[in-house]
Amino acid sequence: MILWGPPGTGKTTLARLLAAHCGLHLITLSAVLSGVKDVRAAVEEACARLNGGEKTVLFVDEVHRFNKAQQDAFLPHVENGTVTFIGATTENPSFEVNSALLSRARVLVLKSLGRDDLDAVLDRGAALLVTRIAPDARSLLCELADGDARRLLNLLEIAAQFSAGEPQISSDAVQAASGERLRRFDKGGDIFYEQISALHKSVRGSDPDASLYWLCRMLDGGCDPLYIARRVVRMASEDIGNADPRGLQIAVAAFDTYNRLGSPEGELAIAQAVVYLASVPKSNATYVAFNRAMEHVRSLPAHDVPMHLRNAPTAMMKGMGYGQGYRYAHDEAEHYAAGESYFPEALRGTRYYEPVNAGLEAKIRARLERLRQLDSVSAPGKSRDRDGDQDTSSGATG
Image 1 (cartoon, rainbow, N blue to C red):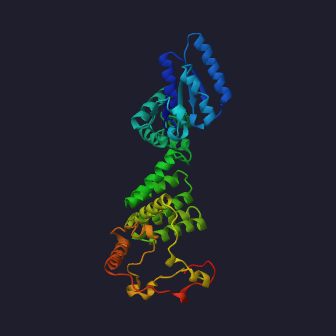
Image 2: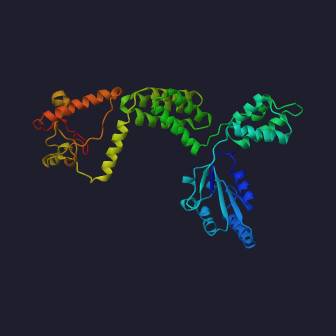
Image 3: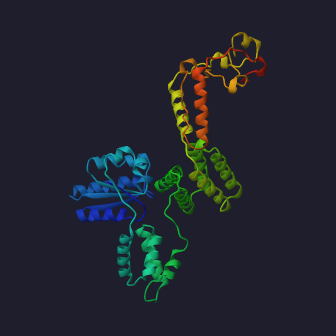
């Protein structure tokens, strides 16, 4: 099995309990300190014990730190029953444990400890230390532990030292023991991606308050503000788009501001951008249109540019028909060449962009609908070349 959960949730303890309950020998390896040589030595010991009639549990802590070759070294011994394998990881096994090992294991998910669990741990710890804990100190200890029993016990032990000679552990002793408060956060693991996902979805969902909460959670946890700023720029294009093009300008300005000012001054600009993006109308129409167009381009042949859209900077190219039939939109009614197509002929009439009826994009939608009405009732006008408007430099576009 693989035990997956945050630090201090009892993964190692659970492995020890399982081995003891089943009467099995336990061998413990740490992927941080061990290599294939240590794995082989553990397997040899397990084989020797198996020959003597004793089965072995091989517990590998931080198994995600083993590379693929090291993880593969377990497979034959797990397969033939030489060892019962238990791995522990704080990272998502789907990404960090190779598929061959994962297919042979059951994944059990451990959650952060709740208040009742932490209280029970405190009671046991206080009994071992022969001390009492003041109610406000107990609440503070549980808050500082942030669901981590190991951190809780470490804080309790240090606070007990600060309270030596006192009838009970006080909140002042806990505060002195805690030092600088650290949140549970990993700069690249599951918690990191869960929180940036929550920030993005809060902005998309038009909730500026929740957006600020997740922004501050990430900053407080030590996330690089520039990473957040880059993601905010992405949000502006993906989720606001042309419903409010100012969103992209504000996001880019926030990125630039942080680059100029750094922390903590620049973080306010990122917060301003997050609040603005969460508050304005939303549209993913450009994002959807871009993905449709890219998928279309990748799945179709590379059609030639139609002759009437090609530039003709030389007499030879003009004589070959480059640019013939091009209609100059500024010379047409409403500055629009009704009925004209700018696609390759095989793709005429294709549509990717469907503006939503929100913010500025509502006006864009109305204009495009008007132009499509003109297309449906107007035949193309008389074709004409715009020789005077062609760029005469080689390779330039008209």
